[in-house]
Image (cartoon, rainbow over all chains, first blue to last red; front, side, top):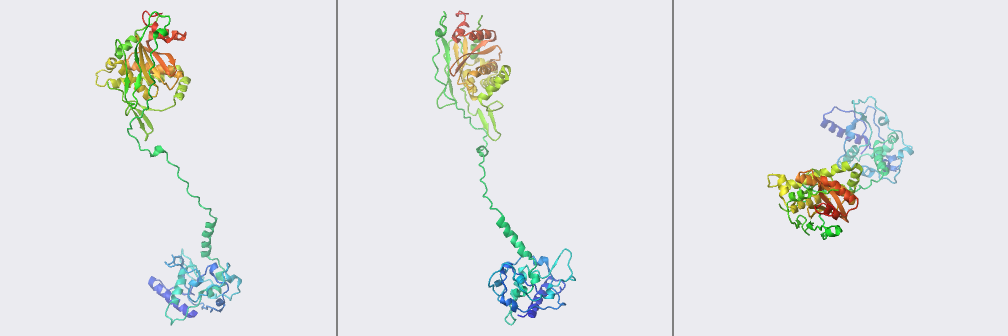
Length: 287
Length: 193
């Protein structure tokens, strides 16, 4: 497909888009040719030099593509980032280069209609009219769709060679490329994320179920075996009165049952607590 | 009077971090050595006050428990047998970790025995104050005194005497009299009575 035919096809396509959106006719300019990624642009492909040159009259209306439209999300299909994906007419790269080939090559003079700025172009407030910023894959897919038209239509002109002949566009900073590089660099520089530290084990008491009324666990060691009461006669060696212990009440703990005490009381005389206390308090010792 | 039953006497409230003793405010479990050092640093008066607070609460709990089913608490305690009172008192003392209590009667004398005191010999005076306050709470009399009588290993004996005899007993013990001779002297017709 020759350039005029391509332009006509694109114009028809854009006209349909305008009618669908019920918008006023926008001046038609040249079909934006996508800027291939630097790494994907073939280095001085022979087909680029032989590609027909686009010549557009000055009065040709330009296509004004709003930024929103260009920056709209890409279709579900993957955007064509490689020249081989742009269509059958795109020449496959022979050898990849890092820098854009248009910088080193001596291309033909650029097309004035494309390169020249259009200050008369109305710009909506808050919006920026983008011309020829081919960082969206949408136009590329549209052009590719044109190539799928009936065979009666001539083959579409190769897009990549056209772009190679426009050094002023190719040499311009390509936002998409810059944007795409930054994340890559960030990924490289970004240190590896250390694995999450294991969470410290919660204290066992935090997991313990609140005990409302737990049974008391009082460990009572068995009292030592009661020693034989010392004979008061030994204690009072020179005493004339010998007192015998009438009560020896060691509190013993029954083995295996901490809750039961057995008190063995061997008492003669009063046995109530009150009487025992009164008797003890009645004693006196005169120095 | 039933036997001492420590079931559910101590509640460890893990949610609030409290330790409750049945019928008593929240407890704090502290090392016995640290408590003894604190008492020694505070002085005899302050240490006695703390011991009295512990002992009164202890004796009150025993009295309340023994008064169940009786019209008057004091009458219920006095009419109870010595073994029953000692049993309850020993249980309460064991719950707060102050050793094993038993009792001995030598003639008229009543000797309270503490085995395995966590304070050791240095805490015998403190324990005597605790027991004295407990007896006060039981019989509601301020005449009784408890004097550390003797220590044999882990066994400490405390003599229950009246206030008028306490100084004579202390002096005899201070001069080195055997605790048996002191008890004998307390009885009429004894060696030095």
